[in-house]
Structure formats: C-alpha cells, structure tokens
Image (tube, rainbow, N blue to C red):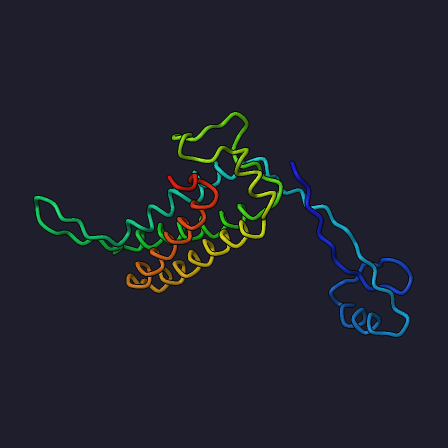
Length: 196
C-alpha cells in the first residue's frame, strides 16, 4: 500500500494550535498579523494502489465505455432498421453510473505508484502488445504524457455526464466519439506495438 502526503498550512504565533469554527475569523486576522509564521504540516493519506492499471481498465473503464457507446445506435438486420436510445429513468441512471465510473477510474489511473498489471500477467495477444514491463518503462520515462491521456479520457467522460444529466442523445453520441478517440490515442502509445 502506498501512502501519499498532503501538505497543508497552519498559521500560528507560537506553534500549532487548533481553531474552532467560531474562532475562524480571529485566526484569519492573526494569520495576517506581522511576525506570524507559516508552518507546513504533513498528513499521510493511506491510498491503496495495489489494484493495477490493467484491473482498473477492465473494471472501471472498459465496461462502462462499452455501455455508453452502445446506448445510442442503429442496428440493421433481417428484421429491418432499429434505432436504440436511452428512454427510461433507469436507462439514464445506468448511463450516469457509467460516466462517473470512467471519471473516477481516470483519477485512479493518474495516481502514482500503481503497477501496470498483476505479477506474471500477459496480454491476450502478446506478439502485438507491449508487455507490462515495457509499459512500466514507458511510464517511468514520460509520466506527463500518461497524465495527459488520462485527463483527456476524464474530460470526455465529464462531457458525457453532462449529456446524460440533460438527456441529450446528440451530445452523448458526439462525446462518445471523443471518448473513443481518447482511448485509442492512449492505446497507440501504451498498448499496441508500433507498426502492427
């Protein structure tokens, strides 16, 4: 389990003091007084990062994304053309759950300290995919790009959440396409071997 540090600031004239809500205004005035020191306080936050990136993708990202992509579609078969759109309150509630799962799954992907996959894991098509060890090397070399891709995923899901909240199927379709683009852009760097 990884522990993350949160640094906060406490204002005090002589050490650290606790301030009640009723004393908040007085504390603010004292903090602005000449000679006041600003003391950093380190708080450990016990985030657990033992769940791997691959497991987060398989649980919090992929199934909800599939549900969102399939929520508005047209199917042509032997019976004719059928258009599917969310209709009931339950349909929209399920899509809202899916969007939130991707939003929070993206947060989880951005947390440092996660392994790419459980020990000994292999891909379904190892000849076409990077190994977990190769992905970890890519991440170690350029973590900023990973954060950028995860942020794009999250931004798309936030727009989808807005579409769901407003029951806007046109926006849901539009941002579903952007969500797909965000996924594929990331996969082209961290999953698929170049030239395959």
